[in-house]
Amino acid sequence: MGLISFLKEKFKKKTVSEEDKTYDQALSKSRNELSLKMKTLAKKAKKVNALYFEQLEEILIEADVGANLTLALVEETINLAKAKKMDEPDEINELLIDLMFQKYYDDYKDNHEIKFRDDRGSVVLITGVNGVGKTTSIAKLGYRYLKQGKKVCFVAADTFRAAAIEQLDEHAKRLDVPIVKGSPNEDPSSVIYRGLDYMISHGIDLLLIDTSGRLHNKDYLMRELGKINRVIEKRLGAPADESLLVLDATTGQNGLEQARAFLGTLPLTGLIITKMDGTSKGGIILAINQELHLPVRFIGLGEKMDDLKLFDLDKFLYSLLIGEDKE
Ligand code: GDP
Image (cartoon, rainbow, N blue to C red; front, side, top):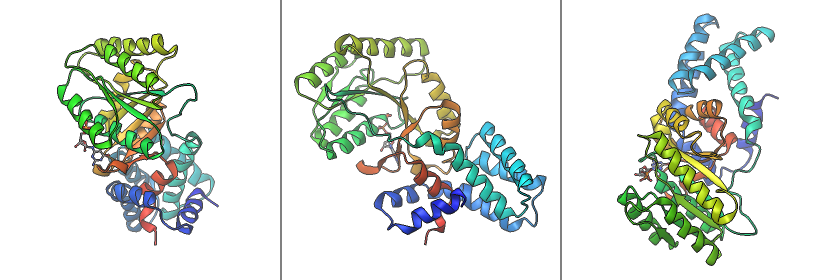
């Protein structure tokens, strides 16, 4: 049985969970862009020829799957189709979708929750340029782990933006989470130091740290983020447990550029992709994964507190490529 049939079975059999529905709804724009266009192409095409594959390529690129990955996927589809002597448009589309699943299947077997420690709290640095959804994602992560019974604390260390401190403060109040705040222009490292002290003295399980994401000067950013990790290491004997980069899906390939700028500034352990519900170019996740080799850990599927979901590749690809077939 091909992967498509396997997943159709998997998702059809069980009653549809709220989480599946959220994925499905949030990805509907992207699905229209990708899966609907592929189906329309297959319907219109009488036979599969070079033009058919070119059109498939166009669809993938328009969905932001990225040029390199698109070319590789289509080439593999052509070769497989030849080997299997397949020439029906629907079959070709299935082959391509199958390949997309296979490419990513191995990467995402692990559980992508934040890891908690027995000896002390987990320290998680959150970084990303302004406007990507960093503050909101911190609040949503806080909400997620509060619900799991964890003791959460925020650290507002983006001291270059007074608005960022205020915003995180509002979230902290709403969630009833303690917050260690910097004053405007205070050295972020000193705020973080205070945050670490608070974590230890209050038995906090999860310290979520908002860092500055000013990209106009990469050297500066590197120095600053490097210093932050050194401060953490000095205080705890180890760097941050996690460093997550937040990217906005609606910025498409631009997000990839941002990510490249951050690589090397911090030992990133994963990505949070926000605003997936606001884009028709959900293929960007595949391009990001292909280019950056960093796991997508969480995905923003809406504005509500519980709309930040653990990234689930099956659910994501199913909703992106097949979802609308659900009865
Ligand atoms: P920051 O400058 O990076 O801290 O960005 P904010 O956290 O202030 O978010 C900017 C805007 O994006 C806010 O209006 C958020 O509500 C919105 N936002 C964040 N994540 C998502 C998401 O997953 N879906 C949608 N629709 N909006 C989001």
